[in-house]
Length: 357
Ligand code: F6R
Image 1 (cartoon, rainbow, N blue to C red):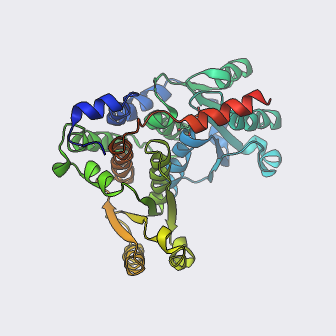
Image 2: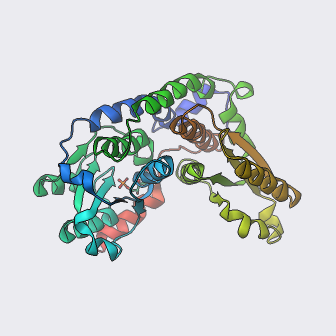
């Protein structure tokens, strides 16, 4: 196992500089806002009655986080679509539907197929990408294109992919000005950064400490409300960065099924660590439920940990946990001698699918 206090060893292993990219998240949040402010948007887009975000993996999660963040503030429904064909309702209400196609590479076939269908059905369309086929199509179709430049894997560009969506919805009048909340989040992450950085020793670094406790274990991340979307982000980062099996669960739903599945297989259950994401501003029932669920799982022999969000606004609270989880996933990879950046199985699947076209 790699010593998480050996900074030189960590840097040597981290070939794709994932730790540096994670540390840039606060800067990305600000840059993403500025970048989306420059795009021209037709006034009719602001009259849409539903919003559909197309994307996969690291480009879809920004849509989930947005949905979680603004659930109590956005007057129209926001849905995230991770598939080829669109649901039938889009055809019936295309002129009232805003579709935002988000693909970091611009070349993800599910997103491109769904985007093409949205265009054919006459939905209001926006493209969000660094380039590729999606940018080419947006230019050919003359639809708004939010283009950002950031050399990283898609999952490490969350600041751009998430904030671009947020900024678009604010600019179209669906949301109040959330820039102060965004600024609070960026400042909070800057304040957290030294404590989570690779130079900070294990004994004083909560991300390294948590990562070490997860070696050889399967993390299951629980979140309620907006933090359910953060739980999903943690799961995906454990998969892609740490090369680890992981699951995410949503409360209160997990209390109606997951809590019963704790007997078999006994060896498997003993390997789980439940990570509960807690919001200091959660309502009393949610807090009670979260604690009771953790008690129940502990009694069943499942190791439980609680990670509490920081910050005032919901955006800061969500991103304080995202930032922590990103670092944890990276240290978990490094502790086990893995470079967090490469994702060979995803590359292989994309190549196989492309070859069979
Ligand atoms: C890679 C990653 C993947 C991609 C997904 C879609 O870092 O996070 O989940 O995001 O394969 O690709 P893009 O984002 O290019 O549309």
